[in-house]
Image (cartoon, rainbow, N blue to C red; front, side, top):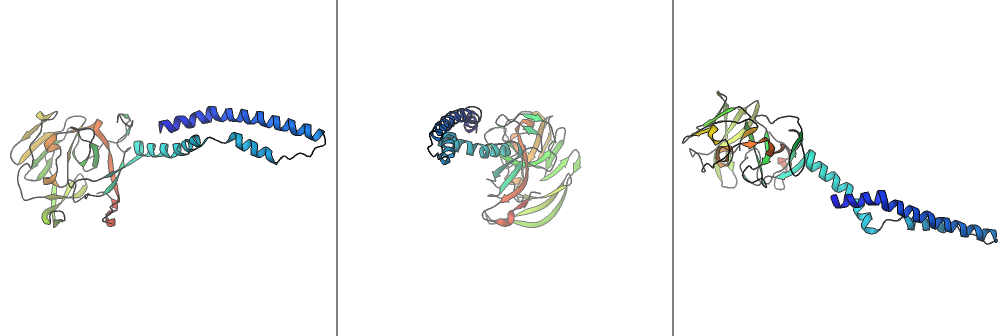
Length: 285
């Protein structure tokens, strides 16, 4: 974008004016020659004047292509940097809400306008809310994008015990649903409707108990206490507690810690394509 933009600017503000000057000089000489010929009684053909002007004003091919590409590249850059960005779901941590192969659109301005590349917030808008499905930079590797559900916002006390959530002392209501068939492993998992912050969504639980992976060291780990089947964390200011909907098949804040506000990419809003299952297209709940 920068290269094509520079070429476009140089052409508009300098090269085009130089071509205009050269064309004016050539046309003036052409008009003077025709005037002399007319004075001598020679019939003048003015049809070539337009051809001379068009030839002198024509952009070189490399400038023409750069100028054509620049608006398209700039539009895509603005859309992806400030408005919407597409992602593809690579893992099953958000099943059944999001499946492997779902192509989603992420709203990048819902939680504030951020500068591209450095991801620094310059305009404050909304803050993530419990129940939102959010894309963020993995705290242990900023080159990776993760997607999970917001479970706790700054100041919340989150307890996860016996596969059930309690937020600020209030137990979250669960509604049993029909068992979910995992097509990848050809097994059934327990499925529930979790009513979190007025945003009901489906979750999966396996038969196993306790944590499924080792717990890493992470910033503010002292805010959390662990036992075999219970986790309690107080979310620090400027951070969020994230979990996958496939609760026993998700590496999330239980294992690697909180997500800082600076890591936020945006809110997942819609599934816009799934090549193997077109019926997946629609909003994300």
